[in-house]
Length: 186
Image (tube, rainbow, N blue to C red; front, side, top):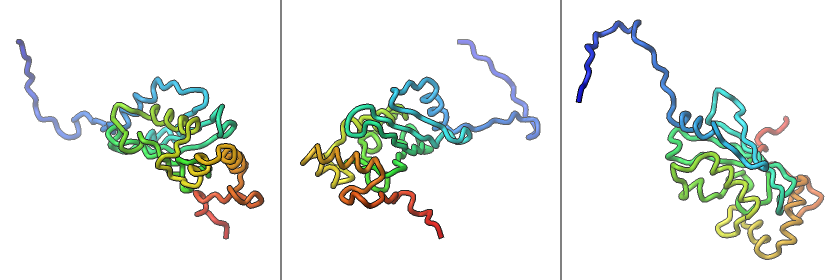
C-alpha cells in the first residue's frame, strides 16, 4: 500500500484557512428536509432561514373528527438531533386526547419510541396520524379520552364546538387560549 505524506509547516494564524463549524444536527436536518415529500394534509415551514432548528408544521386533516381544521405545531430540533427527538408543541387550543391544554403532545416517537433513524418527516406523519386515530390509552387530556371512549358522537360534537373557538361544556363562553394567555393587555 502506497502512502503519501506531506510535510506540514506551521502557518501563521492569519494564513490558516478558516473553517466554519456546522452543527451536526443542522447537517442531518438539512438532509431530512432536502427531499421531504409530505402528504397534502401536512405543511412544514421554516420561519427563519437562519434557524433551521425551529420549524412550524401545519396539519389539516381531511377526514375524521378534526376534518376542516388547521392545527399549528412548533417543532424545535435539539442540538443532539437525531439522537434526541424534536420537541413539539401545539400552539393553539384543541380538544384532543393526546394534546393537553398547554400544547404538549403525547406521541410515542417523541419520547421512548424515538430512534435516530426517525426524522422530522416521521414526526409530522405521527402528528397527522393522531388526528386520524386519537389514542385513549395513556392520554394527556383525560376528559377528551373519556368522552371519546364513552360517547364518540358527543366527542365529535365537542371537537366541532371547540374548533369554533368555544370551550367544551360551556357553549356560550369564548374558548380561552391558555397557551397565549401570558400576553394580557394592560
